[in-house]
Length: 297
Image (cartoon, rainbow, N blue to C red; front, side, top):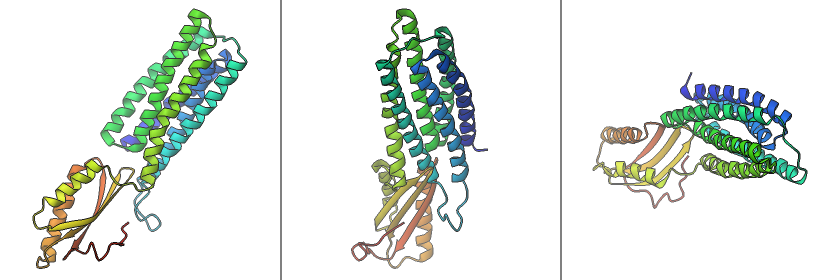
């Protein structure tokens, strides 16, 4: 099993356990902050489960229906995760406003504090593990999951602080006010996840600095006289590069092919964490002006 899939199994298991504990205490205590955290953990569980199946399907080989594979399931999963985070934040915001309008006292305060301490510790170790996997694999789904659970870590810490403050001051309004703050933070954290996923689904080009690396590799080859139509896109853990390289008309196809292979190898060396798919068109002359409207995949 791939490390990424193992990470989703771990995150799903942890989230499922936290849902059971938080939901039980949240219902008994009546704390909006704990119920919000329980709902967030429920969504964590569903998202991590979805991520497992997304990663499982994204690694399937290309076939007659999906010639380029299913790697775009990964950014799709990231967008769905970001949207779910946003909707859960809106629900928390609604519940917090209702509690401000109709305040009610908290019960089982000590038990609630114990639960949130355990939740904070478990989430801390889970975030550390997911960040390790994300750094090692550079997988977008795991990076989104790590960011998601990191928001949970902050929200769990905030809930724990709120419960301690309520226990000390007796002011129940701290609970819904903190719930509002958590909701806005969740939305703030979801935006970059959604944005990155959408850009990848729309086949946005690689960042300028990465395109510059590719250009430098191409221009370092003395027999390549010019290049044009450089097009790049990213799909999950895959990178696609297409470029027209202009050779002298007298060069043999064999020699031009060797140069193209060398360029491909150098590009792959620069993007070791990604699966690179490189298409180099070997032109005997510069046809950029003739074929201005030419389209690439």
